[in-house]
Length: 136
Image (cartoon, rainbow, N blue to C red; front, side):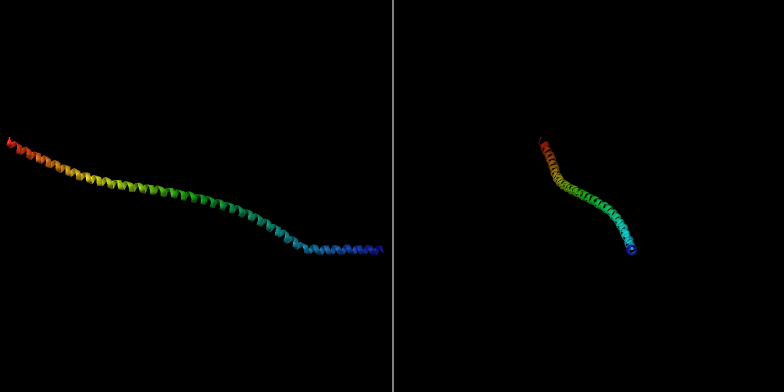
């Protein structure tokens, strides 16, 4: 009976070992696929970190460009203001020049009239002197 129990136990051990060997042979490809999947996951994580770094750099570049755009818009606004001021000054200067030209033309007319009046007065004086000289 001891032999039968020993043979039974030996059969169980051999059967268990054969089952384990068969199961190990079946699990080996699964284990390899799992390790390959883990390696692929690690590579994907590295690639994701690299892409996150590139994304941060791109976001910083966008922020810099936006800031530069705002500065350019502000400079453009200031330039437009200066141009408007310069144009207003030019228009005022042109109006002042036109007024000065008009005043100068009026003064020239008055001067011409005064010169004519002076010449007429001188002529009248000369004639008065001529008339008064024979009377003496």
